[in-house]
Image (tube, rainbow, N blue to C red; front, side, top):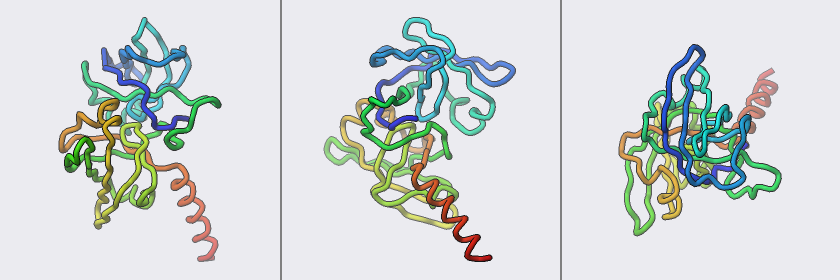
Length: 207
C-alpha cells in the first residue's frame, strides 16, 4: 500500500527479458531512510514491485509478464526517470490517498498550460475508467496522488484536468511530460469498491 506522495526519482539503469518477464534495475540515489530491503515493496511510477536485489543505490525487481502487459514498463529505457515511493507503514503520514500500486489503465497527456509557477495539465483515459473519477476526487497519475479539477465525458473517452504545484513539478516526472506521452492511471480505491457494491445493489433490484 502507498500514499501517492513521491519520495525520490529513480533512473532506469538496466533491463533484460527472461523466461517469465523482465529483470529491471533502478538507480535511486536520494532514497530516504530507511532503505528498502530485499522482499520489500516499492512503487515505480505507480507500479508495485518487489525488491529482489540491492547493489549500493541500485535496486532490482522482477516484473511478471502480466504486469508488463498492463503497464508501460516494457517501454522504459536506460536513462528514463521514474517516480519512487516506498510502501507505507503504520507510522507513515497519509499525505495523499490510499494507492495500491495496481495500474488500472493508461492515460495520455493532451495539453498543458503554465499558470505562473503552476501548471494546468489535461489527460485522456478510456471510457471504462470514467465511472471511477469525480470532480475534486483523487486519482494517481504515474504513482502521484492528485486531485481532479474537472471532467469532460465523451462517448469513447473521458478527459480530466489537474493543477500541479511547483513542488510536484520539481520532485516528480510530471514536469518532464510532453504532449502525447502515456502515463499510468490508478483510480481511487473508495470509488472502485463503491462501484462494485452498487453493481450488486442493481442486480438485487432487478431481481
